[in-house]
Length: 218
Ligand SMILES: Nc1nc2c(ncn2[C@@H]2O[C@H](COP(=O)(O)OP(=O)(O)OP(=O)(O)O)[C@@H](O)[C@H]2O)c(=O)[nH]1
Ligand SMILES: [Mg+2]
Image (cartoon, rainbow, N blue to C red; front, side):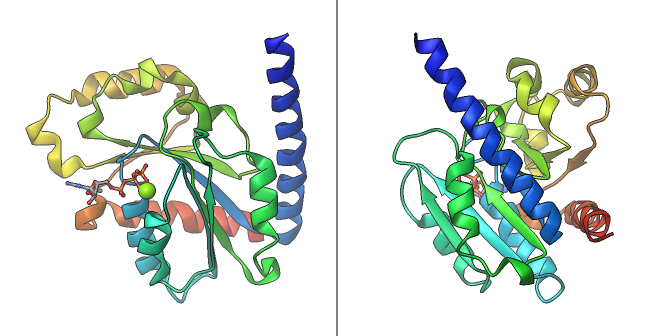
């Protein structure tokens, strides 16, 4: 009985996600879904990204958090439209909330939508929200074993951002073992090393985003 209910939820989530995908394709909008553990650096990444892309693209943000508007407030100063979704305990965003959030934007004038999913390595990877790509954000302080222990995200992601490399020297993070595991899970997955807080590695990430925008705009 329980399994049947879950399947229905997943089916209806996927139907809505497909509608969103078609809609954003028609509007030529890039929507990326940032997924990572609490504290991996998703909001810091957004802060640096918005600083870099200011004036170049029209950007909108969907900020997912279990509680509080703390992250949304951190991003407010960049002047982009932001919709905050407080999930009240749920560990991921679903496509129905994303669809409602999209109505709040003047979509014809938007180039990129960044979704910061709820901090969690597991559930957000299971729920398609109609994004163009899932982006895994992992920080070195979480350990090199995370891809092997939480494989779905790393299989689904189109890009892996390895953040906080400035702290690598203080950890036992084994880059060789990490790279081998990532390669085994998803041989196509590009990895960009970053230290968001110090702006290190931001350029390759910005270049990746610009390539995707070009692909979408045709
Ligand atoms: N040393 C270092 N610290 C970083 C880096 N990036 C982010 N941080 C710090 O890590 C902490 C968490 O960063 P956030 O950006 O809030 O993390 P988050 O993934 O948005 O967290 P949630 O929204 O709670 O899931 C903050 O204190 C950041 O300053 C980095 O590259 N190096
Ligand atoms: Mg955050």
